[in-house]
Amino acid sequence: MIGRWCALALTGAILLFSILAAQEPGGAGENKAQIEAALKLTKEAAAKYEFAIGGENSVRPELLAEPVLRWSNPAVGEIHGNVFLWTIGGRPAVISSIFKWFSPHTHMSHEFHSLSDQPLRGKFEGNEVWVAAEPGLKFAPLPDSPAPAASKSQRLLQMRELAKSCASTKRERDGNVTELRLLTQPIYRYEAPQAGLIDGALFTFVQGTDPELFLLLEAREAREAGGRQEWQFAVTRMNSVAFDLRYKDREIWKVDVMPWSDVGQHQKPYTSFMHRMP
Image 1: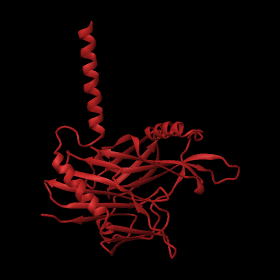
Image 2 (image 1 turned 90 degrees about the vertical axis):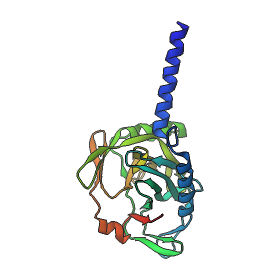
Image 3 (image 1 turned 120 degrees about the horizontal axis):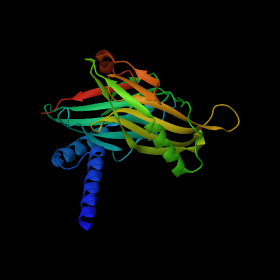
Image 4 (image 1 turned 30 degrees about the vertical axis):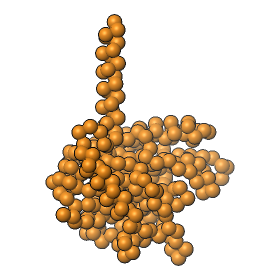
């Protein structure tokens, strides 16, 4: 009986390790030297960007010192990246996925999406490289969702359940379709009571651990009078291909494939830069 219990415990431990390894890059089998090299390169690159949000009285968001997610995608090659956030008063304003290819390519890519409803300007090493006049996202009430709970811990449980009720599909330019996987823990949590924001969290849908779509859930004061609170959502891409998001099997958001010309002009809320390396 003891031997059987030990075998079950060992099996459970192996299963738990497998689940954790599936959610977090950097486990056994990955090249730790590449991971550390990518972390150094991506942090250095992120620090070279500056952003201004708004018009004449623009606000400059601050870069969080550490990435909110480390990722890899062994299905496409030896590639390691990190997700960075720039915030205003703790609230996400700009998000970036910066990554380094090691094989079969060697370049770096810097992907960005505005998380602001205001115009944005971005500079890299002092040179203006990105001007987005359009809002980066739009919040809307999440249909058929409960009222936000009273405590912070209960709201986290709610947000995780709401996120689990969502599903996302990615459609490549060649028509290939992939069902994305939700990371069930938010990669960032925030609040801004002075702006009527009680609680918020940033979730991501991934391929491997590569973030393809970001879901923001916020407990807010409802727009109608009376102090009622509600859950609202917004979605942003981190790729120029097509996506949809379904909530309880109902489509609530979608985007089509973004033309390469739009990506290269750097005038949309999503943009990407390629940096050649030896």
